[in-house]
Length: 154
Image (spheres, one colour):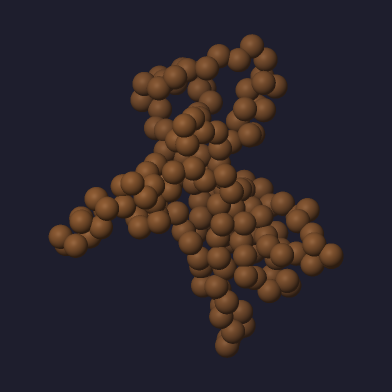
C-alpha cells in the first residue's frame, strides 16, 4: 500500500475523478481516507469505471434504465448522455463503482413488454489485465493455462 498526500483538495479530486489508474497494466485501487480511518485496515476492493452498454434499442437509452443497471454492475455514479452519432445513440455510457474482486459482467437480459427480449452487452473502458476465462481483473492470458487446469480438475 502507498499513501499519497495532496496539498490541495482540487488535486485529490482530480486524481479520484480520473480513475481507473494503472501501473505496469495493474489496476491501482484508490481510497480517500476519512478522519480517524486506519489506512492499514481500509478494504481496497472497489474502483470506478465507465461502462458502455451496447445492443439496446434507441428508445431504452434513458437515465432510468441506466440506474437500473446499478444493482447488476455495481454502485451507479453517473450517466453520460453526450454520446451521439448523427442524432442516434450507439450505446449508453454509465459510470459505476465495481467490486474488483468479483468477475465482470458481460451482458444482461432485458425484458421489453411481454414478448420481446434483448441482451445488453457491456464494454468496460480502460481495462488493464483481465482474464477472459474467470472474468476477473488482475491477470491475463498468461494465467489462463493454470486456470484451465483448475477447471479440468473439478
